[in-house]
Image (cartoon, rainbow, N blue to C red; front, top):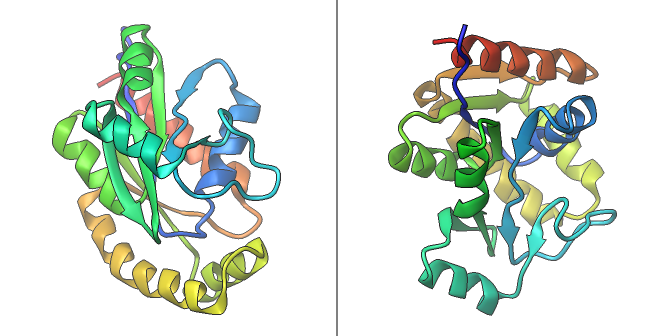
Amino acid sequence: MNKKSLLVVISGPSGVGKDVIIEEMINQNPKKYHFTITATTRNPREKEKNGINHYFLSQKEFTLMIEKGELLEWAKVYGNYYGVPKKQVDDALQAGNHVIIRVDVQGAKRIKSVMPEAILIFIHPPNMEILRKHLVNRGVNSDNDISLRLSEAKKEIPQSKSFQYSIINEEDRLLETVEEIYKIISRESLL
C-alpha cells in the first residue's frame, strides 16, 4: 500500500503536555517524522535550546519573517510571537516525510485554512485541576498568567469539535497518548 505524507497538527491548551508528547515522539522515532521547530520571541525556558525546542528570535527578526512571507502561520500569544517556518514544512513533505507541528488552537485553525489536508489532533487535559497543576509545576508562570491560561483553556476546549481527532492526555499515560497519535497517523496515511 502507498502511504502519503501527512501534515499533522498537535494542539490543545497551554499546559496540556504538547511539548512532552513531542519530546517522547522524537525519543521513540527521531528519524521517522519531521518535527517542525517553531519560531518565537519568548525567552527560552530552562533546558530549552535554540534550534532544538524553538528558534528564539528578536521581535525584529520575527517581524522580518512575517514581511517576507516565510511563515506558514503566526500569532501573538500571551505577549510573544510564535510561528511555523514554511520552508521546513514544504521540504519535509516533498521528501516524503510526515510532518508534526505543535501549535495553539488558533494556529491549528489557520494551518487548516491554508493546508486543508492537514490532520488536526486536539490534546485534552483529564480535567482543569490537572491542567492547573501542570502550569504551576512549570515554575515559569505567575498566578495571573496561570489564571489567564486556564481561562483561555476553557474557551479552547469546546473548539476541539472542529478537529478531526481528540485525545485525553491522562496523567502518567504519556506512552498511551503517543501510541494513539501513531495509530491516527498510520490510519490517515493509508487513506
